Length: 204
Image (tube, rainbow, N blue to C red; front, side):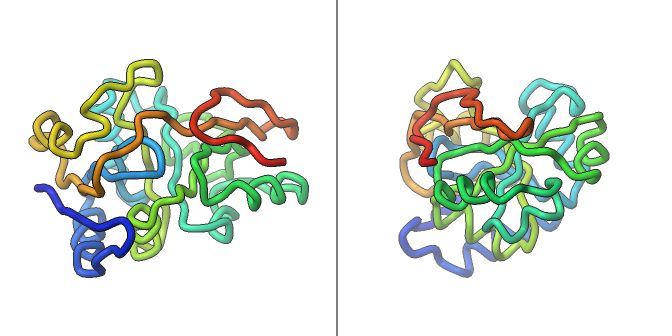
C-alpha cells in the first residue's frame, strides 16, 4: 500500500490512516528530512523485531533510533540532559541530526540488550512529525540504506514501492527524498563527538 502525503500540507485523514497501521503493529516506510526510513511504534515489540529482520540483524545488535515530536518527550527515553547539551539540541532540532544520548532504563528492555545509549531524531519534516504527534509516542526507526551504500531506491518512492511493498504494511510517499544521511552526534559521554558527518551542520 502506498499513501501519498503532501509534506507542506499533510492531509489529516491520511496521517490517521498511517497511525492506525502503526497502532496495529505495522511497519511503514516514510520520509524524513534526510533519506527514507523504516518505522514502527515503540509500543509494539514484534514490529521492532520485524524492523531488525528487515535490516538482516538480530534485535540486540540493531542500532535503531527514536523519532520524537519535540524535546519535551525525551525524558521518558533518555537520562538527565544537562543544560549545555539541551541548548545544542534546541538549536539544531528539528533538523537532520541523530543525537546519541544516555538511555533511560526502558531502552535495554525495548531492544533486548544492555544498551546504555539511544539515538534521538526530531526530523524537520512535517509528515514524520505529524505521524509521531498523532501517534502520541516515538517511532522506532532505521534508515532504508546501509550507511555507505545510498542508492536510487532510497530517494524515489516508486522504486521503494517496487522493492519493499510486499514486506511492509505501508509506504508513505512524501515525494523524492534526499540521498544524504543525518549527521550523528554522540553526547553520551558529555563531550561532543561527530560520529558521522551527514547533511546537518551542527550549530553550537
